[in-house]
Image (spheres, protein in one colour):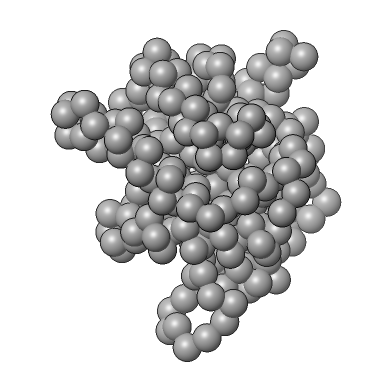
Length: 261
Ligand code: 13P
């Protein structure tokens, strides 16, 4: 795997629709989004339920907005009822996949080892892999944030070669869907810690791995989140479900990029 820089321009804004929206709702969302922002100047992605990959990807075909999945199986194919392979989501039009989201870890008991296999499969398939990591409130209170993240990074990236297809999202669990955003100072020290782990693993090129923040991101707080050094983008749940709030975040992120150039 080459160590070339990620092909994705930053900031990167990814909406994670989780288990929301049917086909017609998704289609009118994408139409409205493209009417407002036909070709965003930054990297924008929509991580949609499996059933929406094809229709959304078709609608986004002539735009720069990427379509993604929220999970996949690590095998190329096989007797795994209910699962879906990297090649299948690519075939449907996805170019990235979220892996190891805290909801997958929590409700579906995904382990770092399983997630590691998925990351390897995605990267070797030339699918952008967004590896999610994050600590619970209790872990934070007990002073275990760095231990938890170190383990998620070391085990999640075990044997993974540095790749432009690798992205990491730091999503503190206590900030997901709660309306509570981590304070910029807290995020800054955690993302700096994550980067130091990437550098230990991959050498200096580890510092080029795009690091996204997720957890109660909204139009009102996205500018200060993007101003945090080492935060290359945002992973957005609730606020990505309405066109107006997602478009607003994309607009703010586009300006943030221009002013940093
Ligand atoms: P919220 O933005 O709704 O807190 O969700 C964050 C998230 O889980 C994105 O993957």
